[in-house]
Image (tube, rainbow, N blue to C red; front, side):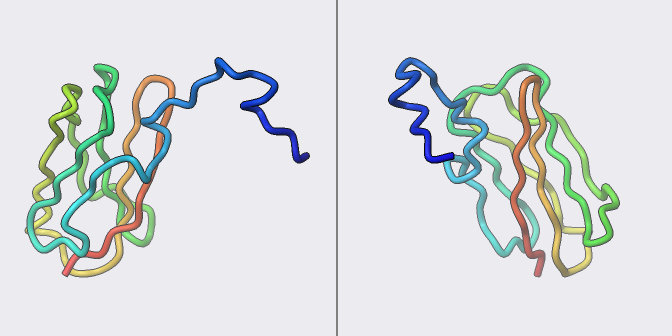
Length: 100
């Protein structure tokens, strides 16, 4: 609608965890291990989920809530496209991945 929310609600902050571009996800493409580093400390219920091209969950683990990040072991997964999702109390975000 063209409304600039920052002008109407200047104190309204956007959770940096919701901004997928602020996370550090590397290396992409991934060969064996993927580093996932959130921009700020995440709530205590952070989950990292990797799904294959059919949407099937192939890897799931708790994520680091300290801001130092987590390491996902993707070595046993076959090469191809995947989606990494981070889910926590109050939000979620996702990134496409390629496994070599």
